[in-house]
Length: 54
Length: 270
Image (cartoon, rainbow over all chains, first blue to last red; front, side, top):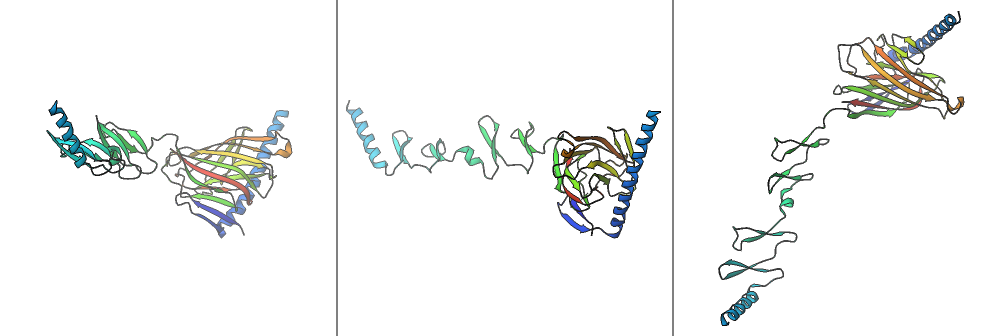
């Protein structure tokens, strides 16, 4: 299971707990988004390099 | 001649009769009259006191006498006059103030550049949420060191207030790349997971409590990967933004895979 840390900056309390369904869904979504972002950056860099070569 | 010897004899007799303990003094109480003054308590000082029969008294040192409580200090209130000044509240500092009786007071240190640690810990699990951030500071400074996650080449991501739709942007100035990502900010990139790899990132969020403007964050960092050569390192100079105007009360850190190491310290900056 995937868990997270919650650190309360006022009380100093640190809680470790399992992610709830909503957080898990977001976690999976973030992974997809990261991959998509990396591809976009690579694509933009390739396009830029191509333009420089022209 | 006789008179002088008589006086001496009388004085000798008076001394012998009056003295009956170690430390006793013979003191005049009036013309031709003497009395015994017993020695005072250890450490007490002999002081002139016109109200006393002998005109003298043993008393506690006035500085010692003035203090009553741990932390007390003694200050002059005028020429030859002392007064006790009780210790101030924790973390206050002694400050000159001409309006005070003693000319001094305990007061909170002047604002400006003071860093207060709000949270410190290790990066573990899949995410670390720094919650309930006090709104009493001007800026926030977050230091993250040596973060690693299970996936090689992983990035570190950040959100404010757990908002997953914040129109975030993170621009790596060194490569002129603007990463447009509505849901998160990539705040460190391409971290090697080798045992000897290190990283050190500094995130500065100015005026994080304002509710009128979008928020920004300055990011400086360095990571190194010794497997690429002893001098192989990545400087990371970038900034992050969000179109949200909310005051920031929570910072969310995650790597899209589990953290395996790393530390964080969050400071409030006055």
